[in-house]
Amino acid sequence: MFARLQMSIDTEELMNEAISKAGGQIVASLLPPNLAYTPENADYGFPERNVILELKSLQKELFTPAYREKLRELAFAWRKQGLIHVFGTAVLELKKIAADLSTAMASLTYKIPPDPRCFESK
Image 1 (cartoon, helix red, strand yellow):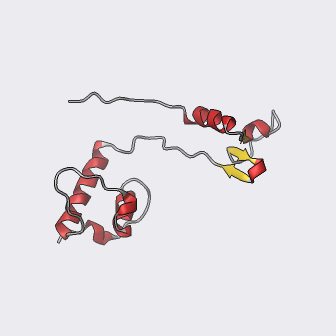
Image 2 (spheres, rainbow, N blue to C red):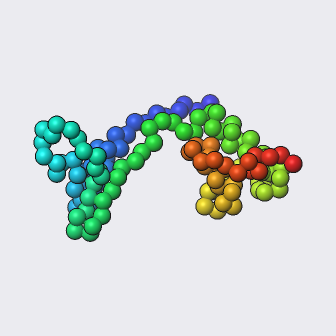
Image 3 (cartoon, rainbow, N blue to C red):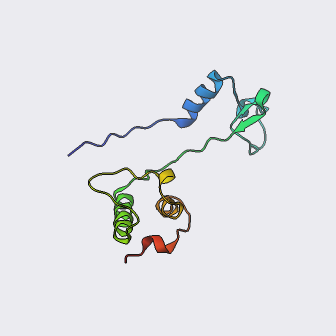
């Protein structure tokens, strides 16, 4: 049907450039060279603003066919319980749905124990 576009972005390189242009510093560049060990540290800093930043990025594909199927099953269970009403295609935004539903939705991706009631069919 549609060809899947695979993009690979070096997020660290992209962020290094963006932070530098915004006046920040790359913490690794402030460390002495040739250390016997590399200490754990933040990735970026804006010392004049007392701000430190840690870069976090997803390293694997999250929205796999298995994820989409689990999300579909979850949405059907919610619809059957009368928790959501959808006709046609809809966007479920985590910040706009009930907290227990958004936690259940997030638990498909992250290691968050969901409320088991969100998966029940009535």
